[in-house]
Length: 115
Image 1 (cartoon, one colour):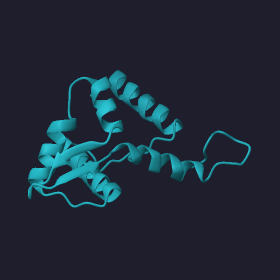
Image 2 (cartoon, rainbow, N blue to C red):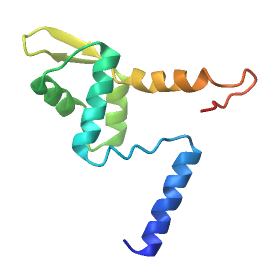
Image 3 (cartoon, rainbow, N blue to C red):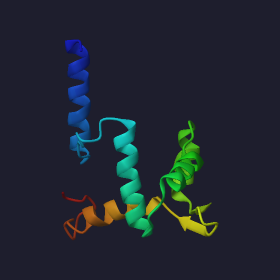
């Protein structure tokens, strides 16, 4: 990596840290990202998906259009389980859970959360 590129990356990571994003060094590739999403999705929705169900869920919510993907994640997603039963789930509350955790540590007179 060239020094200018390394500096740009370092500055970007510092900016994200200043915005209270947490560096997750264990998430280095798509497989780790999907495993993390699966864990949180299943926890939020109190469901255990088979590999086939999770693959279908990813197919339904993954799109190259960021607006559509964001909208889909904020809506309740309905899909069919392997046994034919319907399942409704949401990924939106992942963001709400994160916000609730951050805001419970906020000062009473502040609209900015402390971490």
